[in-house]
Image (cartoon, rainbow, N blue to C red; front, side, top):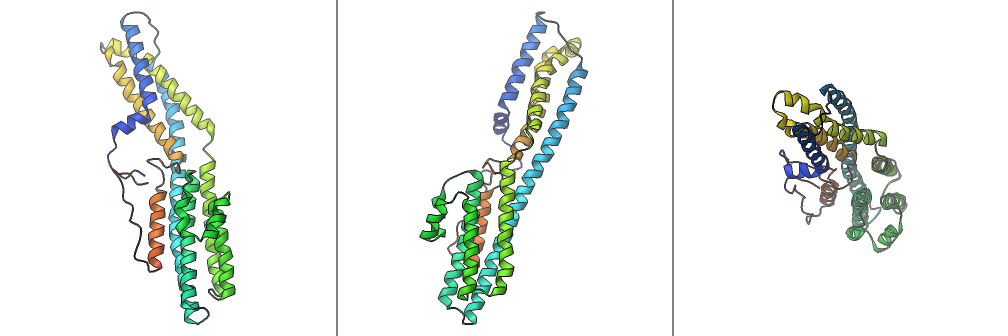
Length: 311
């Protein structure tokens, strides 16, 4: 996620290098052809104005929809953070209460708390890797028992299998006295919420915006790039500033290209790009907070922005 206030123009131009390159090439060719009388084809500027208006409508709709997807993704992960804290607090409080009532030993309560909290941390990291289609599963090995980690590696949907393990251990906790039967009614809905949020993330990840908006926006943009110099050259020639065809075309196409690219980037918030949801930092927050709830002091280092970017 971009946190810096100023943008590096090198990154901006790199992201729209094809559009700006074509704009420069086409506008220079049109200017040279008119300057040396090789061609006299001109179009009224109203053609470019109408096409630009249609392009602006498509870009505005796509950008609004793309930002809605990005914000929904960020809201979901905010909920995952909050509910992870709630789930950790519930596990810790309920297990400590069971130990205080001599239903289980202090050692058993401590082991149960750590197991459940660590598995919840593993779920957050697994969901991050799952959405980014990364495979560094060994990062989670220290959070799970050897048997659980082996089952985890065999699973197709790894975040889901961790939630399934949590549900099983909730029921076992009630049987062995770590949890009261009432505790299940408050904790199980949290697991269902995590399932729902995982499904919402997968929906955003696997369901792009309708491709016709992407296709026609690109089509209109490149048509605008080709037509704009032809519409400008005659009017600028009358003002004896025909050499301004390239700069004016470049500026106008630059604006539309940047607007278009912003929508394309925001449309996919789980690709580990510069503007994507900073899931690594969010998982780091979950891990730090839950381990702190357990009373641990050896916490992971808090992730900070690097050159204005948080991942």
